[in-house]
Image (cartoon, rainbow, N blue to C red; front, side, top):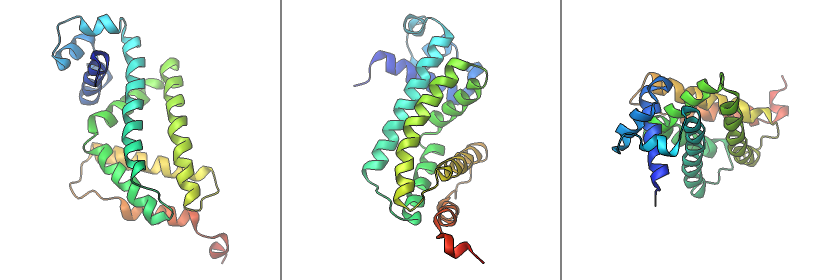
Length: 190
């Protein structure tokens, strides 16, 4: 069951995802949550407190989405992992659009806010450790591969959010990238 605090944070995510950091005010959240004016301020007295709580809520919701996906997948080949990542990418740019846009807005804000930057780094480390296990399962022993794939998928999502393509399916390009990363060393020697 969602608490009132979580409901306000979910409304904050919709405001942040829909209008960016400038749109995020206590009044805008009150309106989005359809609660009396001042309700959000009762839980989060400052904008900074609200932003810090949003970081935690975004992280929590994204982890829940990832956990749901992980329950149904155990990729052991580049193609299997690519299918999982492509589905997650489509969801991030589709059904979870506001959540993803809120995360990107928070990332931009973290460039100017050390407290937010620290919270973002902490939540990213938890997800990164989990994803690293999948990379090892498909044969990647190089820890830099995690960042290459993560950055590539992030770019795909950002591009899809900015310029939506109804036929968006990154499965083939992600497969190509993963195949290239885990290709046996002897096969790369001319």
